[in-house]
Length: 406
Image 1 (cartoon, rainbow, N blue to C red):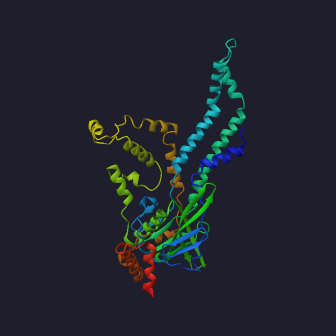
Image 2 (image 1 turned 120 degrees about the vertical axis):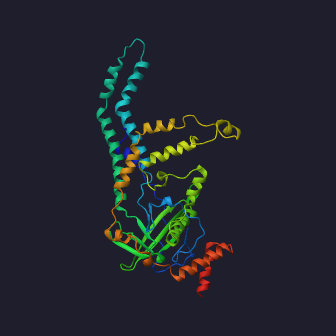
Image 3 (image 1 turned 180 degrees about the vertical axis):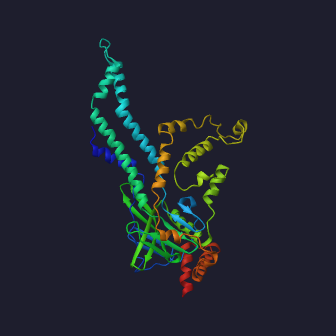
């Protein structure tokens, strides 16, 4: 029998909702050695490219707005999503099947094996063997089953509790301010938008089979009252994703809700508009409909072409009953149980923001909206003209700002 600690260690690896943390770059010293936009700093195997202060045009396509948990005319919110919880629910269903096999199904398999492979001259009573199977090691099987379910449920509750304690970050475009709430002290920090320091770091780690690169998007918000800096760090798959995240935030703050180019690409590929469920930035009961619609699109259920025309243009024939295995998998995962779990996690894992933040997030009259500084407008125009007209890269274009300042 596998020890309980081995089961716990194995399930912690398989059942972890959040991906394993990648090696995080050291937090840069932006208080004593304030960077310039477009500046590159190197330290060992790490290289940092600063995208602000002075959030200018980067030229990088913005990431999809669906990566943000909330976006309105008043503010953009980062954090507070429950991505991965549907898969966590499916893993829970897998563990439940293991428990059912250990406690209920295995005695029947054991009895069938004994009856089939016993010598002909020895009579075996199937139901008697089933009864013996339930009696053998029943305490150990029940204890293991309870332990497995307990570990899985504990992991679910722990993830939801952690999400409920982590406040999201809000960018208010009407006030041109950024709000950060400390998850430990619950103190509210509000800083000017143009003072936020953003960067993308690239580091390299040598392994047995070669080198691996890691990318990280970071922001630093200076707390002048307490003489500290609040850091926000997020691992990204590439430098383009990291800069695209900042560009999406910048476009929102400077121009309003940006056009979702990723959504346009999806509409072109699917030949239809994304529905309301597909546009929601979190997982829940609606994810059931999203997954089913994706499977329908893959099976050409909504294709208007005839079978003859599909064969004529060389496409694969329309799949008959394309959802049959999808529904089989839904039965094996206890129908909508993972989606109900994700819906509950979204509601229970959403922290209640302090009253001061809620007041700060309220809309204000248009005449009271904050305006971008003249320095930012001039710098943005300089960088944008250099990149679009002179075909310069971001770093060289930002270097022109120093020359203009001199």
